[in-house]
Length: 290
Ligand code: PXG
Image 1: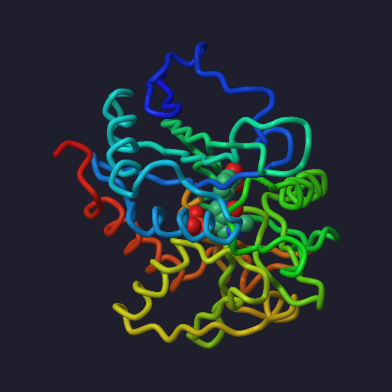
Image 2: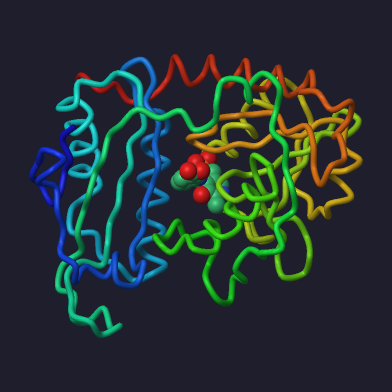
C-alpha cells in the first residue's frame, strides 16, 4: 500500500509523521472519508468542500489548493491500483511542540490513505442493524462543533464502544436536550406513514454527504422527506429506519433499545432508497483515470 504524505507517496512501513504533530497530540485536525466505485470517486467535490469548510471553522490553513488535493487523491488511488475502495484524507495541524497553541505549527500535514473497506458484514445489509441509545451524548455545539469533521472523535469512539458492549451494531446519540442527533458514525432516518424524516444538522448531526444523496433520491422518487427534531419515541414508533454514511452506505436499522422498529425487518421504502443509491454510486463520480 502506498500512502501520500505532503506530496510524496511512501510504502506503508515508511509512511511516518512526527510525534509532535498536533493531530496526534491533540486531535487537532480534520478528515474526510470518501468512497470510489467502478473507477469513479463518489461525490469528490462535496467531500472537498466539506474538508475546506472544516478547515475554515478550526482556522486551519490547508497547504495545497483544492485542485492539488483532487489530483493527489486520484493519484493515490491510481498508485494503489484500486478501482473500488475507500479513501481517507487527513489534514493535521502539523508538527509543533508540546504546547497547545497551534501558533507553533508552521505547516499543516496532508495525509491520503486508500484502502479496501467493508464496514459491516454482508449479513447486516440483509437483516438490518440493531441499535441501542448511548448514554454518551453528542458533544454540545458550544463545546465541539459536530459539523466539523475533526480528528477529535473520542466522543463518537466512546459511544461506539458503549453500543458494542451492549451487543448492538450501532448506537443512537442524543444531544444535550435529549433529542436524537445521529449515530456514532452514521446519520439516521425514520419513515412513518410514507414520510422520511431525519434530525436537522443543528440537532448535533454531521451534514453527511450520503445524507444529502438520500434527499436527492427521495426527491427523484417522489418520497416526501423532511428535517425534524425527533426523540427516541419517533424511532420506537417508526415503520422503518435506516442509517447513512460513506462507509456504511445506506443500511436498514430494525431495532432500538430491544424494541423492533416496524415489523422488525428492513422496510420496503428503505429497500427502494438502497437500490437507487447503488445505481447512483455505481455509475456517477469523478473518473480516476482521466
Ligand atoms: N455522522 C458522523 C459522526 C460521521 O462520522 C457520518 C455521520 C456520515 O457522513 P458521510 O458524509 O460519510 O455520509 C459520519 C461519517 C466508521 C467511520 O468507522 C464512520 C465515519 C467516518 C469515519 C469512520 O464508522 N462516518
